[in-house]
Image: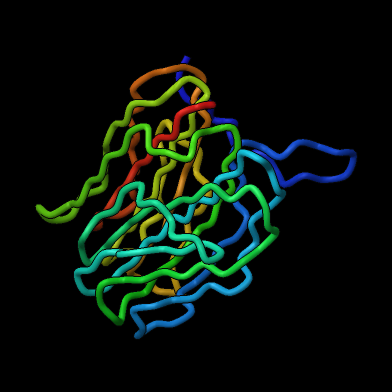
Length: 226
């Protein structure tokens, strides 16, 4: 068995329904274009859980840059993977079992960067990197961006993709799409994220395929099951 493409579950509702292993709890546009520090105020963290991880997936477009740091509710987040380019992507995370909401602070290495952020609550996995990989299209423009990571039994794989210079929609292979949006209403940027619970230990080949030729940046992070 490979990745489960039914990994996403809705937030807990009436009748005590359980919260799924991957929950999109918040997403934001850039709150401070022109600043290297961007504070997302009162970000929702979803239902509390002793094994809850908050993962922050950031994509950005502009001058060459990195997302150099993230704090989540005052806690320095661990870097899962990131790229350094004019179209960057990064995944940071921290174990956060309690707290309904809090601020998330992003730091980028230069100013005038548009970013979009997706915040996800993960449950049932370890708060360490099992495997990761990154891809930056430095040779020009393309439509197919592919990387592979090793995945653990009952683990989770997350992916973040940034496309620049075209507002191209993204189709994911072997991960379930979570967001696919044009940041800040821009016609030449793309922010897309995906994630899946993995049924059994395997190597997962992930492809982000764009509807138009674009420059792209892809990051993947794998978390081990508990």
